[in-house]
Amino acid sequence: MSLSTHVLDAAAGRPAAGMAVRLDRRDGAGWTTVTSAHTDDDGRITGWSTREGVYRLVFDTDRPGTFYPEVAVTFRVTDPGEHHHVPLLLSPFAYSTYRGS
Image 1 (tube, rainbow, N blue to C red):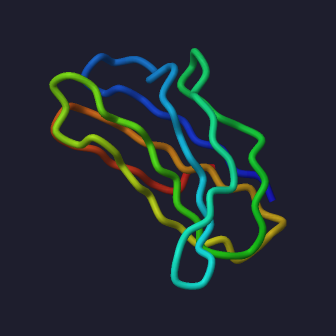
Image 2 (cartoon, rainbow, N blue to C red):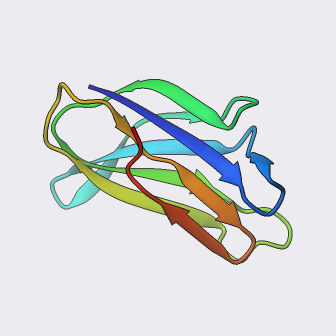
């Protein structure tokens, strides 16, 4: 199964390039880091692999003037053959996410 994300800076109206993002997998009562990367110039990370389980993407959103220093998006993978796309839309005092295609 493949996983991708796309981070958009809604206040600036452009991709959030160079943002650190970590992928964790729930392991019993805790979390284990699977991998990490930085968004490209278009605000994207692609090509991560997952298997069935519960995951979270942790976005390092700590920038001057922002209220949220990090955003964690937790989601469940039930079909290992499916692609999952988890976008994040950011502004200084709000964020939103959804399951993309």
